[in-house]
Image (cartoon, rainbow, N blue to C red; front, side):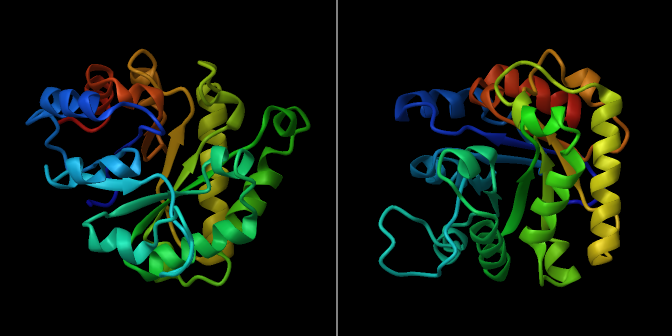
Length: 245
């Protein structure tokens, strides 16, 4: 994937049936040609997208290469399927499934060691925001996730700033606040790991109505799209604005 170009990642979460996926693929066929679009379907639908030569990511990964871990997918298995990316540390994994900073670090490290690009999600809750702890939370999440990794490994990491209070609510931060936080993130990664200009996506209620406004934020490297990615017409609009087709 080209550096210094915007990226759009579609996180479909646990949505769509097999029939709906087939309809979705027919709708987007030959309309998504940019190599800067990553689609992350529910894991059982991955082959549908891999076989159509899209860049495909998993929504989750486990930290072990193989073993008795019922229901999990290893980075080695993912890479063998032609998967290029994996989302790690999404707020839903942190909160609903109680994933710790340590587990997230282990997942990041295992994914990178198995040739996967990592989309690492970071972001604060509404309470943390109200207590002015956004920077503190982000610093902890980044430092713990990337601890001990060298710059070559970190160069395969894309950060996704997703304020938790914005996900699925339709409420997004002000443009100046997103820009300020992304500046802080980039500066922190350089200060702690000597990696310059790490890509930082924005996620949280990104849709076809606000994408033009969000796309004007100068330091944003692209977008992590949730619900809108499950609607092919809306997703194509977002792609068109952010990266072209």
